[in-house]
Length: 389
Ligand SMILES: *Cc1c(COP(=O)(O)O)cnc(C)c1O
Image 1 (cartoon, rainbow, N blue to C red):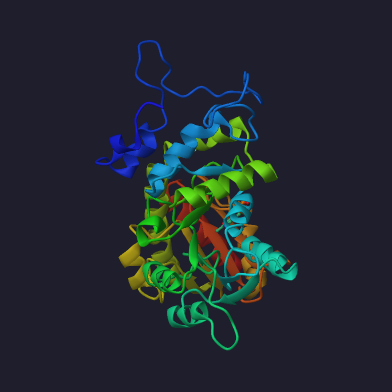
Image 2: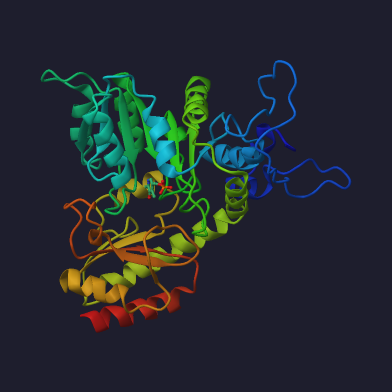
């Protein structure tokens, strides 16, 4: 790769997202890194530490994308790509010592909670769940007491999906470290251009790169970035042994998506803030949840620790679940589909999923704001809301 990490030290992350991970500027060299479709590499004798040998151990084709994500998160290590966000989350959970207690947001991504419950049911870990925006309660839970050992890991998701609660990242991380717990942060919804959990002191950051990082709803991929060499090594070992190594093509798609991350993030965050404000005065809408709004309980915190407010909005419909379903059936620019962070706007009623927790209101629609014209998005949504009312 062309430049060491230090080359980007005085450049904005927006610039690093475009320029990092490219081949050296030698006469005749390609501007983009080659994509290597090879499962194995010529290798005689005892292979060296960083020598490519077999693509499950480590796929060199994905190094450019791993370098860019690592740079954006601002840590000393490159990202470790995984075959999905859940595989990255599984790897991060492997950092919990056996029998250790994990403190997780009660409204974390439902896949993360399902995994944690599975690990707890098998006796691998113990699990406490609490609302992550209740800082004092989380700090108390980390310390343990009442026969409960101090936490071994704190899991932070902020904003949470789909309730968009804001956690006090720096305060919680400090409290976790005081009791010796390591901290993992799911940065999927905000992206590293909006908040950098490693700067708050987090030990690991995980992503579903299927969402904003990839940005085009055409891939399933995960990433984890560790702050220490030790944790980085554990994540890489976990990936190699479990075989959750992604393909070269997925690494290519991620790198291609990352080149426009800054533009996409800027547009979707700005449009989401505009739409959230307009939605607040639509009669068919009972409640609008977006951290940009003064009515959001985490607004001040979001302003302090984020440089944007994210591209996801949740709304509760005055007409209940039926109205929410009707809205999703009557839009022409908002795709009725699950997932978020793509260039195309999407919406769905979350509780249509039997696995979604009952704390998510039945009438809640999650909107993922893409990069279309904001007035087109508004007019389409407003007409669907009015017709559904
Ligand atoms: C989608 C998502 C995941 C899971 O990622 P996959 O790529 O679908 O495995 C994890 N966390 C959050 C916040 C998500 O939105």
